[in-house]
Image (cartoon, rainbow, N blue to C red; front, side, top):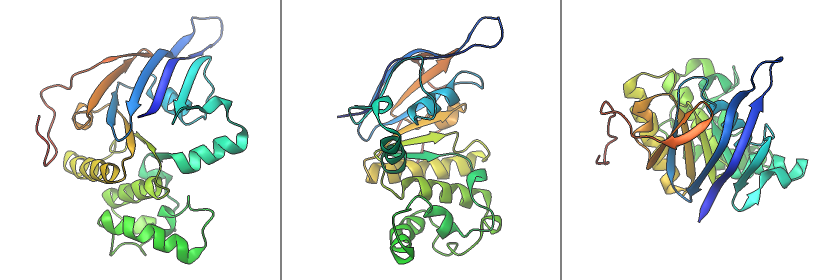
Length: 237
């Protein structure tokens, strides 16, 4: 089953009288249920624009974004909000956490339809699975960078989304923390049969994926990670 399908997606920016910036230039891609796909590219390659298009935060100039066989740009405003809340999980940087809020509160923010006890019961097992059993009542500023990133992962997965967009989730972490976080992310998403699109400029991070694509100057092509890539525990190259 195909969870994410991009069809000839195009988004250009026009600045002054110069040539348009071809941020996304005819991108087509299919990602199956439960698949872990990496999108590798340097800064300015169009990765952020593509993520915004898949999240419905930008409208394309042409082409479609289909998630679970629905073109998201045919949805009403309310349906698009529901798509972002229930079908989509976005993992960004730890800077998105609320200062002064506990790990438990940060992780449960997307459970807007639940009351306090229900939120806690839905969120605690996920935080425990992420190794934060003894850190749930700690505020953001009391957590290490790696712990904060795990809270961000919990917040994205707490609604059991079918599609997870991981936007440079380890960009500020060292290699050891990167390995730990990506290993956990892959395990959790496999357990939940969640489809993952990992966006990264790091060849090490890209190497954990089932498939890797490169986005350069808005165009998509196949990519093979360099021989500097590492292998996560339990995976063979």
